Image (cartoon, rainbow, N blue to C red; front, top):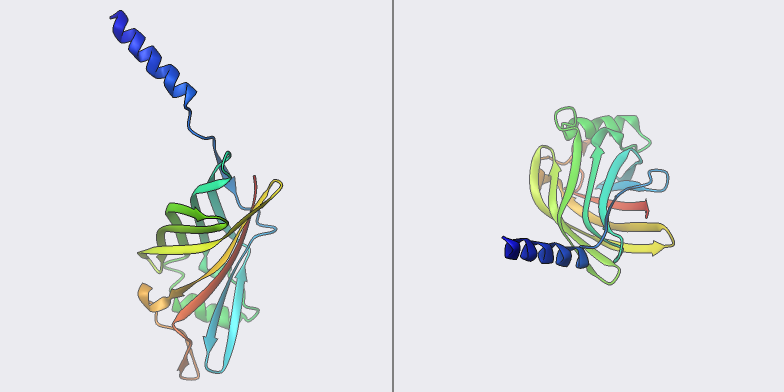
Length: 182
């Protein structure tokens, strides 16, 4: 019994001595963060932005690297400056049935300041494997993640919106800038 107690005690001390890096949940600062999408139509291009979304991460405070990142945005929170266009996008994406777009990472890797987050994108009620890349910069107590990626609407069962019988391009380009107090 003493041998078992001693072995368990040594194991416990070893675990304390080699503790895992400190992890910290961080939440994006909405005042300085943004999401924006861009679409092309044969007659014009347009964009819309949202500042009404949630982005959270798990940060390793020793390495200043993320191990998890998750973002959730309501489709109806995007504003293009044209309420008719915004209503058409909401209708076309069936945002009343599928109100949110979410991305949740399953693996986050780094190559210098370049970040690659592999995970799941949920759009229009469909979940697909998805990879998002970007750049991470740390200045003092502020970490910024920024980048852009493209989503093919048809991969998620959405027909591109049309105007005057002409459809937009099937690809939506998204730019993001997420700032976190660390």
